Image (cartoon, rainbow, N blue to C red; front, side, top):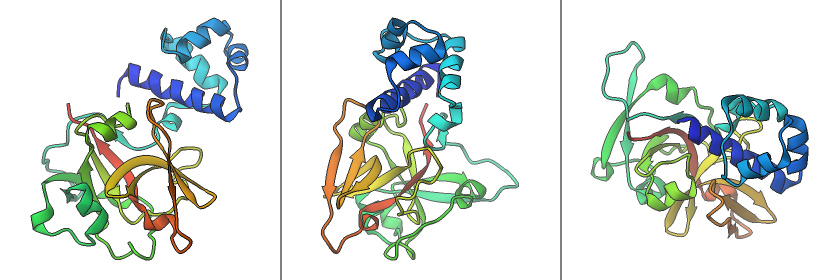
Length: 238
């Protein structure tokens, strides 16, 4: 993640607050001491903030950088094999269909593997649905072009998203931060933020250029029937 990405994350968080009605451009200008035109230009991508300006906006909203990062991003290449005192786990990278449907991953379904430290995996809290409680817990998929575009800049094309298939709950994983899920939507596996209201899953992209999708549930279905897992790690290729 670079300085430009941080600008974009902050800009999108401010726009979400404005959309929810908890913030206005004029109020933000008053809080930061900027002219409203300056704030408007920033929100509309017409100008960037200085480092000092970024700090002023974060302070005005009682935000820290880690609060606008909705998941554990590793902005580097997939780590090569290393010798370390921390045990290493081999995570299979599979197709979206295998991630959705295969309780146990067979060798034939493995496209490639990555190595992740065991502590980074097993420090994750689990909230499995009854259906997924005995499924193989951790696996990964590569984000295709459409998935990465919908979640830009959180996911770059070809990024590997590690899924925790023992987290199928809509309870936020971290307070005041959205949780990124892998969700079954017909034959597709979508990576989205998810809400639930009036019997429908609301699938929200990060990019404002993509539409919100509504996924109605049958009376006998629960959100856990569609939530394949939580995205707990992302490895971006250089």
